Image 1 (cartoon, rainbow, N blue to C red):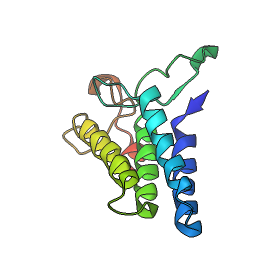
Image 2 (image 1 turned 90 degrees about the horizontal axis):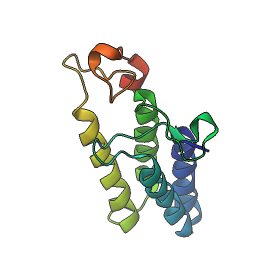
Image 3 (image 1 turned 60 degrees about the horizontal axis):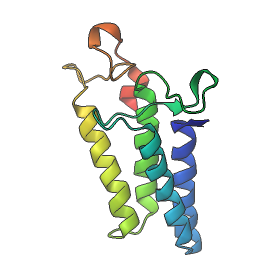
Image 4 (image 1 turned 135 degrees about the horizontal axis):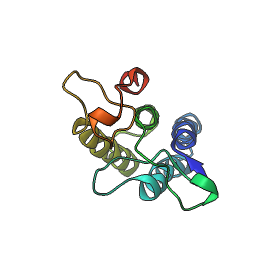
Length: 136
């Protein structure tokens, strides 16, 4: 069972550990988390990510809907991680690419008031604007 919330904190801490220690293996570990979670949770058609995997006691089942706040945590983790990865490195380029593709997907589901709704992959009429997801 995995949640998007877990990955973003772990990944940013690994990148920071690499910066502090000089051990570049931490950078690889950090970016690997984003790569793995992207593969497991990202919908290739919409570019949006599920909140997690392992719903209803099925380890393969994705959470229903793309959660606004979960995307906020994902972006927070990516931005924090990018602060510690060496600029211009393959790790930095990969993490930055994931950030850009996620932002591009999010811009497509932002409402005209600038808000994102609780469930990003639902019609606006079926999901209310969400201040914490928008704030993140």
